[in-house]
Image 1: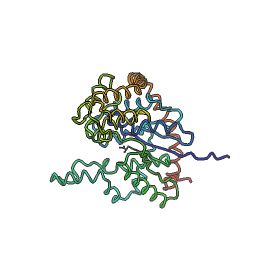
Image 2 (image 1 turned 45 degrees about the vertical axis):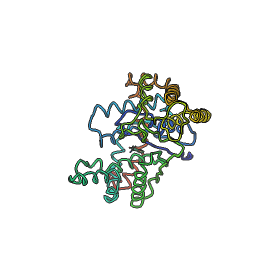
Image 3 (image 1 turned 180 degrees about the vertical axis):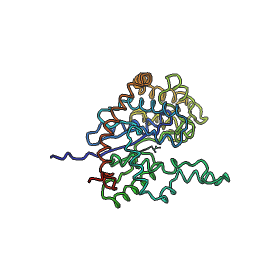
Image 4 (image 1 turned 120 degrees about the horizontal axis):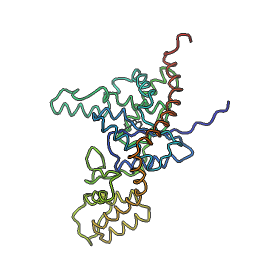
Length: 340
Ligand code: TRP
């Protein structure tokens, strides 16, 4: 038997609770699709719908978001045949692994999770019971996330800075399992790309669902233009020189522009371009990039069966890989046929 060299496995998930926005596109989806074309890596991109249930109790919204996020990846050119593209809930080995990991995870480790601690602190400052509104799903969220990663022995996990602690927890959990049962898991690493832009939102803070300052990725042209025109600027007049590094509109422009477009725009700022004109150019730049994918997106959204088929194909491959590994893991912990 010949052994094929193991490619570096890169894995990331998107929680299916919202509508994709420009920040998701620039910060995560676009670089991930680019990375997936490399010969050196195997890419795993999945829809984290079990994670969605932790914070979203609207079934219609979970379904709609799953549809929109799946359509987004495909419309933007992800080649689902070439990488691993699947929905978390289609791979039952992931919740199975979650239990195996839960049994090696220290409760004290989970007590230290930022998201959980923040909620406890909120409860305390509101004079409420510290456990108010905290489900076991929220508490053990990092174990499910560790299972997502360890199920496929991913080496690298591209995530935002807010997820670094979850990656440290996944390493800790993997290490404990390996210590107890043998070296079965790769210890994953967070991959924080400093070149990838964190996009400001319409109010100047980081573009994020939780600040309600996002620009949805798939707005029709007119609405996209309107949303861009609403981005906050200062009161400087046309003709006054402006500082691009203090302007959200420039930061967003820079994330879409080429090197030479960026330096032209910086010059225009120095020459006193009006805010209205910057926004018009920003709109044209973003719109040109999204024009073709937007048509594909609309077509995919109106034909969900096509996406369902893509996800089912991905799930079949993911399950086959996961089933082989889970068999070894079950054996390691002592869940074995009695005849063995
Ligand atoms: N928790 C991640 C987020 O909110 C989403 C996620 C779930 C994830 N499972 C993952 C990311 C595994 C990377 C790897 O952004």
